[in-house]
Image 1 (cartoon, helix red, strand yellow):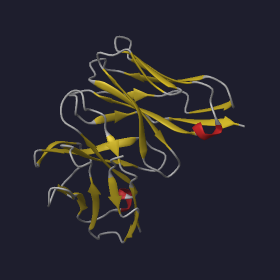
Image 2 (tube, rainbow over the protein chains, first blue to last red; image 1 turned 60 degrees about the horizontal axis):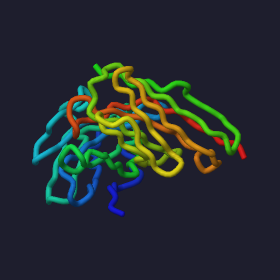
Image 3 (spheres, each protein chain N blue to C red; image 1 turned 90 degrees about the horizontal axis):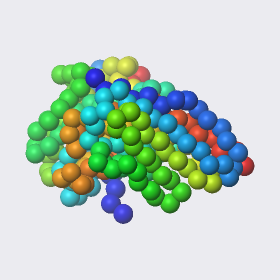
Length: 115
Length: 113
């Protein structure tokens, strides 16, 4: 069964360092998303990406964040200068196209710890 | 702004019981609603997707219903098993069929053997 894969599963980084979280969405999907979940809190939307550009972003997704689809299969989230409050589980998701293929599939997440 | 609420936050039931998990949303103009399961420290597994034009969807022992006008959805789990213990999240797409999902905080279910 097709699945969304994320690497790494865990990442520990020093405050102020750059991190790149990687995702391989389901191959025929066209809509890509990043969400995060701070421990004990709701899953929050960060950004959506379609047709090689950001289609929507939340207020959380400030200039420290960027997304890229560098090679047609990977989808990355970069945090330029990490802060302690960026510690969270980050989820990648993808969806197919059309009104009948709207089920969102999520990866297993990357647990980011900023120390 | 869409808000999704799931009450109670936690539920404990004995094995074999049928149960209903509730989800409510403030803006009834949704495109679809999706139920997920999350095991501790793990990702989100999609259980059921209900399009806005549908009233319910079934998968095995799970049945999800949607009442858009009242802003409610329920997830019915029949004959619960200890393996059903997990957090169940509902999420809605409000601005398009492929738009972002707005999540509830989830209901943590514990099924006692």
